[in-house]
Amino acid sequence: MNALSKFYQTVEPEFIKLRSVVREILQEEDSLSEIVQLVGKDSISETDKVTLEVARLIREDFLAQNGFSPHDKYCPFYKTTWMLKMFVHFFNEATKGVKQNKLSWNKIKKKCSGEGGLLYKLSAMKFKLPSDGQEKLVKEFKQLQDEITETFRNIDEF
Image 1 (cartoon, helix red, strand yellow):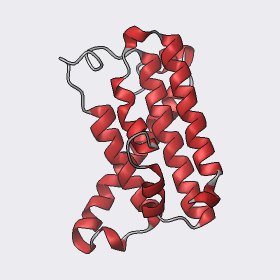
Image 2: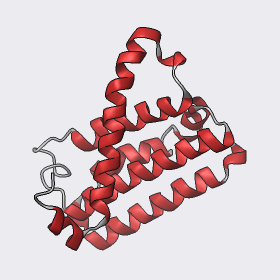
Image 3: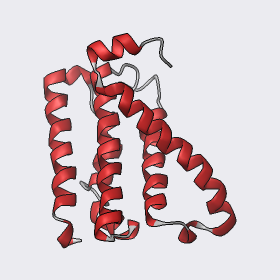
Image 4: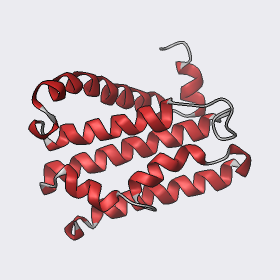
């Protein structure tokens, strides 16, 4: 785990923290999965539902790759870092919405679903082509970050 820490600190210092948060989300999902199998998804807390959904996004849209597709055969480090940043940002905002504003996961999911919704955009990050250039992709990721922040800022509309 620490063999490349110096490199990460030089190139993208935030990466180590993001990687740790994502690993915690996936580990939490693993323990929650056993509970869900026993008592059902309706029996777990809303924050646990957020954890399960974000973990699913990470597994299916970040970790699952197809080396034959143009978007997966090569992923530059900046794209990897920005994707992790977006998953963690959404997780943090959704968790905060549940804890501070008493939102349910179903309300968040309803607001963020559909074509062009936040969940779709998070899922579609993997399709961004590195050949479009770092400047363009970083700009798009920053716009998504702002959209996530704005969506949860306007929480009264949920």
